[in-house]
Length: 156
Image (cartoon, rainbow, N blue to C red; front, side, top):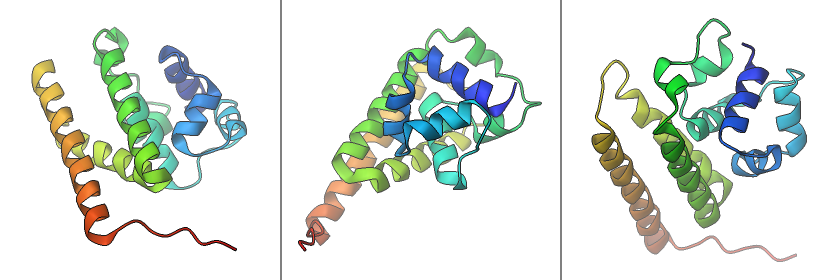
């Protein structure tokens, strides 16, 4: 399956529109359309990582046509709620801290997920870990905001 086919399948499986995915990733709806049509690929790793984190897959899965959908993704029972939690987390990070905050959150989730490759955690342990990461992320961002303040918007 090509990158575009995988992206379309994952997006539709999540019940997400192209516009919603574009908003979450900080790209245009046209970009999502082009990705799904295999007319273009994301520029840079940031968008690719965001896609992977949004749908709970690896970036390698997205770009390598030879890697099949993992067996646990094919079952997709408990994954829908986790995907919604990740999407909600990324959306909340984006709303609170802008596109840079959303990208940092996506990178954090991807890197944290790499710690568990090759091992298995129970759903309860995965939920506890995700909650801890979410709390730690927002606590760190709030602490930085308190310490350094918000950037003032320039008026022209």
